[in-house]
Structure formats: structure tokens, C-alpha cells
Length: 186
Image (cartoon, rainbow, N blue to C red; front, side, top):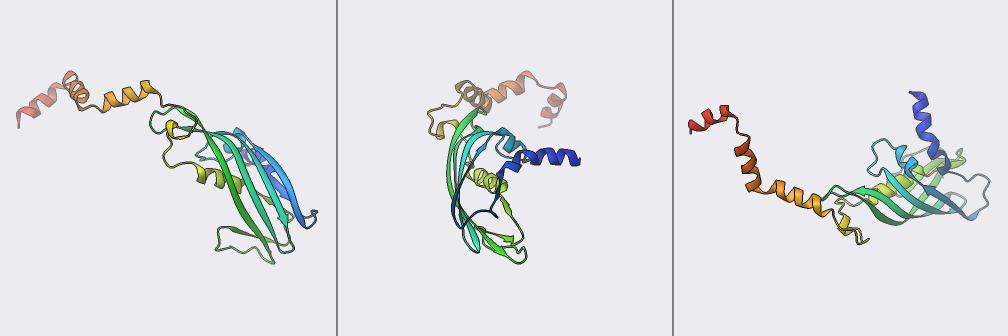
């Protein structure tokens, strides 16, 4: 079990930013997110993706300010026709990291509190949350802006199955003789 957990964390190790040796000021970090990133999160909404991440870390005396830009595509399943499609993402967010004597919980979702003993920050979960929150609640091929149309054959099948006349035909062709006796009781 322990080996499996370590194996899952390995792809995320690259998303750790060491800030101890950095001078006060702005520093640039670039990362690439692929399928292995999403595999590390067990119940991820997104299973596949190809994203580029630019992080500008502004180191100050008592805090870090992270300007995060995520751009690329993720694979989603259409809720209408069930086909897989590429959905473009362009996310720009800010994350504030403050230092404290003890690790305290912050009430503000935009602020992370780290102990002064820490020497790096792991941004994998932060990136994962930004990506997951940007996934639309209703995912439809036609609404992603790429000009992709829903699978017409699947839409026709679904419409055919939802047609009440089709359901009656199915019920009459597959009638069970035991139901006939119950219908006579009406």
C-alpha cells in the first residue's frame, strides 16, 4: 500500500517550488501538466489534459504572492452525446502564502499559511483545484467554442429511445404472459 501512495505522489514532486534560496523579488517558474498529473488524484473529474503553467512568484519578507496562469486543453465527456472532446482552458489566478510561527488554518481561501520552517511550497493541489473548478457544470461539445458538433448518430439514438411511441412498441413486443393476467384485473 505504501509503495502505491509513493508512486502516485512521484508525478507531483516536480510541482514543488523551493523558495528558501530565492532573493526578494519576482521569480518565474514553468510547469507542464499531462495525464500523469490527473492520474495522481484518485477521483479526478479530469482524466486527460495537456496544459502549460506559468507561475510568477513574488517573494516578500513575510509572504509569497503567486500569480498563476494555466493554459491548454483538457479532455471532457459530453453530457449530451457522451463523446470525448477537447475543452480549452485559460485560467489566471492569484494565491497568497503567508508565513507564521505555527501552521495555522486561514479563514480566507485565497491565503495559505505556512510555518517559517518550511523551505518549499507544493502547488500541485492548488493547480488541481483551479483546473477542477474551471470545469463547466454541464459539459457539451457544441458549447466549447471549437466548432465541434455533438455526435448526430448518438443524439438520434437517444431521441429515439426517449420517444414514448418507441417505449410502447418495446412493451408490446416483450410482454410477459404473467402481466396479461394482472391487466385483466383492471
